[in-house]
Amino acid sequence: MGKRIGIIYCEKIQDTSCVGCAKCYKAVNEKTFAFEGEEDVEIVFKTGCGDCPGLVLPKLQLQMLVLEKLDVKVDEIYFATCIKKAHGIMNCPMNLEGITAKIEEVFKVPVKLGTHDY
Ligand code: SF4
Ligand code: SF4
Image (tube, rainbow, N blue to C red; front, top):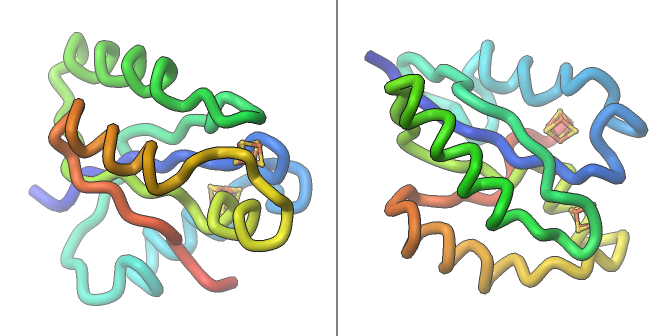
């Protein structure tokens, strides 16, 4: 079985300037950028950051419950490139470092930043 990943996106960018999430799907499906060299990658969820100021933890808690009920495991969680950009150019108020540490501590899943460079 391949790597099962979850993607968190910026609610201000997703489907607005980054329409249809085609970029992340392409990177995952073609194993490019963050997924270079992977044999198989499967997206098991994709959810929003909770909108500004980025209340992502309660959303993830619910997401993890849903996955548990469905008996679906997740190996890695990605803050997508939209969140990386929101931080770099949009003054995103989310405490990305703090939230990353919290997610890894609470859910025991590694968290990565950035999915592609399209
Ligand atoms: S970076 Fe990825 S998750 Fe974010 S909006 Fe674009 S395609 Fe969707
Ligand atoms: S700017 Fe940051 S907190 Fe606001 S919607 Fe985007 S990722 Fe979420």
